[in-house]
Image 1 (cartoon, helix red, strand yellow):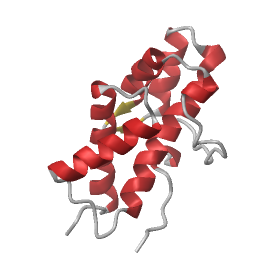
Image 2: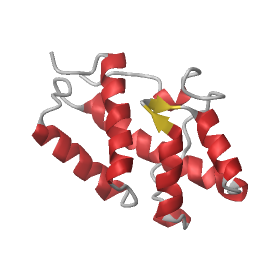
Image 3: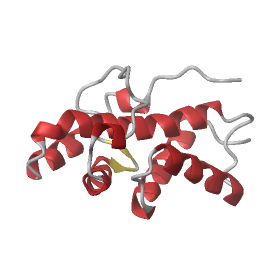
Image 4: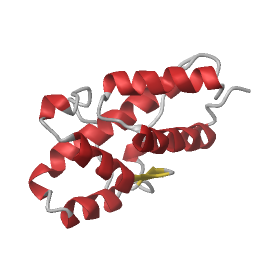
Length: 139
């Protein structure tokens, strides 16, 4: 059974201001002409257990990337959206076995090729927190 849920990236505790779901979250970073290194550094600032938009905005400001802020936020939200969608739709609850982790990471990299090992670790940390917070783990 698929659960209906708010997006974690919309929660007031996870963001400086609630944001609606973007119509174009499925766009890849490559479609938006973003440097993978910029995105990797941004996700490191954005996700520490769960996403905090204020940290991301500060990172963007400090790096002088204000002209690219919207594209960066869209790319990161698309990546987190992929993770959320997969976890919420996973039949029978998320098992967190090695096979599951490998499959999940493979999906993330296919859809967001800019992800590297440290970026994946951030997404996996967020995903573990999300499953605990939302009760998505296999029983």
